[in-house]
Length: 473
Image 1 (cartoon, rainbow, N blue to C red):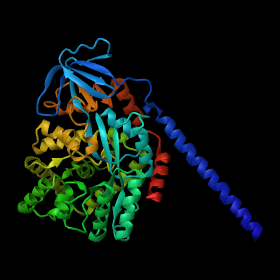
Image 2 (cartoon, rainbow, N blue to C red):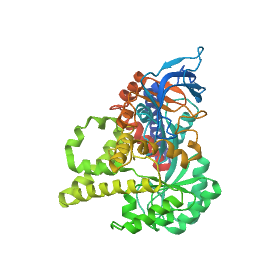
Image 3 (spheres, rainbow, N blue to C red):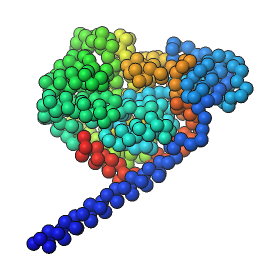
Image 4 (cartoon, rainbow, N blue to C red):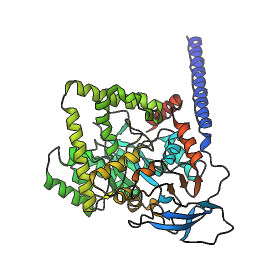
């Protein structure tokens, strides 16, 4: 018997070693395949000559300006700067805009970091944190790879009755407090609260977050009134759909909506609409299997495309099969989202653009341009829409105060376009050049980032990272 147990033990040890080796090889190969993102010999000091500047400090264009960038920061903006000794970049006839921020994304791999940059996104806020995101953040902060400024929320904290492997169920207030301290110590930038948090646990989490000096990004909890979320240290409330579902209880109550919007303004609370991901429901039901022919689906992480995206597809196509009115209801709700976003903007709510890219069929990098397009469809001007992805995030987070506008002293996160985005907003989707922390990414580099991300083969590496996250959350 002892001899048999010893053999079983040796066998299990051998299998464990083989598994560890296999996982290591998978991750090493994946890292090698994204080595094109490494920051090599480049410069973060130069002058951009004769460029039209869209500063986003107000609705205007400063024509034919020179911008001096030194060590990644904007040091001068003026016509005809004398900088003979500097590297010069010709901006004649082009428009320079602050880099875009997408403040609600789900990042699955390094390829997506390059893809965001290729579409002019220079800041992302990852909203479902896992250990690999902390390692990713470290490499970005240490300037090891080209990537947007990268911030990550913690794992999704919810209550004991809100089941799902993607969520961290919390049994009681003490556990909630402990998780806040744990996630702050591990290096997460925000606490992500979720839909099933009861008041006693939520109270404990908020109190501990204030003590730990870490803010909360709240997916509204259905266990408390919507108005509960207008309190410290919550800084943003996610999803316009939850204004309808949680605050209004699906009722067309204009008085309650006005009161909710006033609470946003009074609390200086940010709101992240994520209209893009909700509209994907309509696209699923409208296109059905034709959706799979869309070439842009090749930019979605292959593991998530098979698991998460497919689940979304199955859910809504099956719902349509027995509920003939669901497609109309979803489209009507989308139209209601547009009206709410317009009303929020007019009232002075701090709208921060977020897409939920990386979830369902919302595509990293591409999503922000859909999102801004919906804001314009809602009735915002191009300037107002662009503020949601530039200036407004810097009003919410001190860590972004050095971004969002083109001014002396600000970080040189910028997008160079062929047309004036205040007139042609869609020009931002195809940048001529992108600057991140002052580093120049030309058209060839941006194209490489897109090509490398397209139909990438990192299925197993993604599953390994996701498995680690679910295990250790």
